[in-house]
Image (cartoon, rainbow, N blue to C red):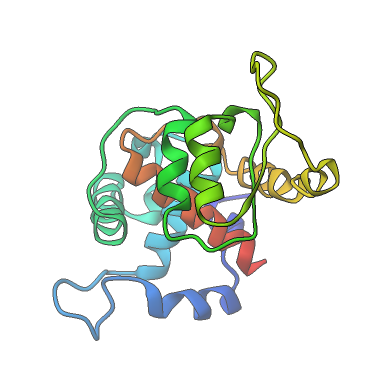
Length: 188
């Protein structure tokens, strides 16, 4: 079975996705030689977790596909820096502008500043207490049990090896990889 027998997008999925791809003939700038094969090449990398240099030639020159992917991620997500950051310090930015009645998170997000930010929005924090916490907050265990839906989504995203292994060198490109994997799950 060759690479071409294992493409990710069926024709219906491509028809939904094609108008969103940069490099179309109706856009300014350069036109992609084969937009579908570019997307399939990126999805091959996302699915297999392989290094860019191992991209099969059927998808085009690996460096051209990588550079185009990187330009797309800059256009969609802006700049980005390398490195990993802890969960809790990033959470305040995630809920900024969010309107919600409930904010659910796991124990890694149990921080006073986050609980205060959630309360300031008029929402309920459904976060288990860190075992080392002296002041314990009540936890709605029924609501927290619904968090499994989010965990199931993460599990499906991790079927894409590039998501699970976090090989991307920039946060921007990693976000783009996760976004593409989520789009594929949504299209299914």
